[in-house]
Length: 282
Image 1 (cartoon, one colour):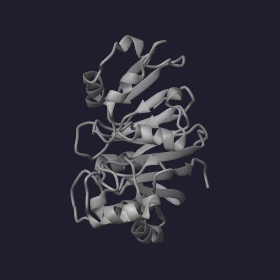
Image 2 (tube, rainbow, N blue to C red; image 1 turned 135 degrees about the vertical axis):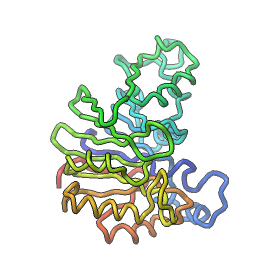
Image 3 (cartoon, one colour; image 1 turned 120 degrees about the vertical axis):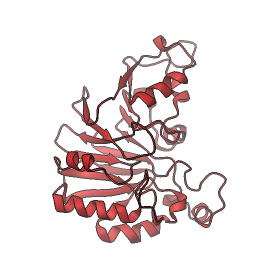
């Protein structure tokens, strides 16, 4: 359904409970289950559009009944392994005897040069049989308008690698939202771009939680609050804007109940695996 966004995963690179971890939060997340168990962050918009394609793609397919054979656009925010598992894309190759009998039409992989280079270096098959198009996203604040009228604008994130992206997505019915996970505090250049919009929904990076980090590639909980405060002052968000924070690390020391206690009084919702967000104006 193009009228809702599925938050497939809500964890950081190591997931929650983290691999091999014996910290108190991971042990408690095992006990509680539910919203405290977090796979790696990714998003799905209908059957045709996905943002990030990491190591939990099979889990997401089984858990939510996703049909990746219907994907037409795959946007990769950056080449970190929790966001992009390029070896899996090798199965998008057409063949009566394997590995897949593909539907008609191409799958477009949208990403910066580091993403496309990573994809190419992991190719194990004949690209001419993959029914794929590679779309290099080069310039800051570039745009792509898809065949269904959805407009993606991409802007540089303040992250730990070259060419990491956040997205502004404009739906045909004028619903506009922002996906900004995997970024630290916004640079002033980003604030200038955001000031040209009034968003109906925003998803913000909340990875670092209660950690005391002033500068880095992720936001702390306090930095999320200060960002939202500035957005409200500058009119980037309005009273009806739905505010969500996502991409939580186990080392941030916040279970889902802690996140709710911290964020909900400020009108911000903590995300969880399987959360569905309606893309319609309030």
